[in-house]
Amino acid sequence: MYTQRPAEFDYHRPTSLDEAIGLLAEDGARALAGGHSLLPLMKLRFAEPRTIVDLGRIPGLDAIEEDGDVLSIGALATHAAVAASELVRSRCRVLATTAEGIGDRQVRNRGTIGGSLAHADPGADYPTVTKALGATIVATGTGGEREIAADDFFTGVFTTSLEQGELVTSVRVPVVGAGTGAAYEKHRNPASGYAVVGVAAVVRVEGGKCSGARLVVGGVTGTPEHAIAAADAMIGIAPVDEAAIAAVAEKVPEALGGAIGDTYASAEYRVHLAQVRARRAITAAFDAAQG
Ligand SMILES: Cc1cc2nc3c(=O)[nH]c(=O)nc-3n(C[C@H](O)[C@H](O)[C@H](O)COP(=O)(O)OP(=O)(O)OC[C@H]3O[C@@H](n4cnc5c(N)ncnc54)[C@H](O)[C@@H]3O)c2cc1C
Image (cartoon, rainbow, N blue to C red):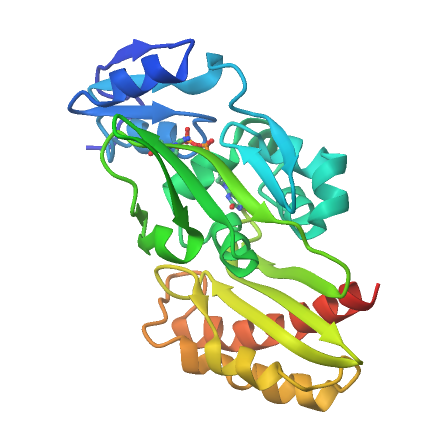
């Protein structure tokens, strides 16, 4: 039955991480961050948590800091905060521009990076970009803290390798250094802004040639996929060689077996869009590397 009212739940607003983790260890407990994904699910009764643990009063969980050659972004950092951060803009610009392109102003002001990663929506932007950047997700539970490579974090549609009761506390993103460029190109769903298809490219250029590349495609399959054949084909090409970039993009579908279609875009259309967006992302990443 369709209802606009969630089922009953207990509400807690802890003021420390330890308290939150203790509460989340209980059966049926669920974290609440920006609420932009969880609350709609609760209203539709697709999610019926017995206990809500609101993370919003835990101090420090929204910090954005530089730690050597890594940016550490607290789970509660909103998309708007990531987009506006001078540190993120100067050290990992692609993450700021990705945040800038999420949803609308309201979503960006409430939605958080930790919530987006934990929710693992196939159409979300951060999963694709963090995977291409080689980021690490820091998770904290009753057993302490552990680091999970973004490559191992997304395990299926709305599914991650987080254990029951574990919280994402931060994400550690390598700084994009000189000679390296990164870009994210998405085909937005016109209603929501979610990626119908999103492609993230990270390239390294040395001596006028590509010496390293990662290409990740989101929105087409259940989890963001590395387009390995395409990334391998990028090694040795020149950033200005449009024909070579087009040939690379033609290899993208090799990674997209199991493409998902829906009423907005068929699987075939998504695979086509992935090639178009891959060309643009690669070109933009090369521009940024030479920038
Ligand atoms: C209209 C609309 C448009 C949108 N457009 C886009 C878009 O263009 N691109 C995009 O990427 N996203 C988009 N989103 C999603 C948005 O970015 C959400 O903010 C995000 O998916 C969830 O973040 P949240 O902080 O709101 O999490 P919540 O809704 O609070 O939580 C989502 C899930 O994650 C869990 N969770 C939250 N925080 C943590 C944590 N720290 N550790 C462990 N689990 C946690 C919750 O228990 C819940 O299961 C859109 C949403 C809406 C409503």
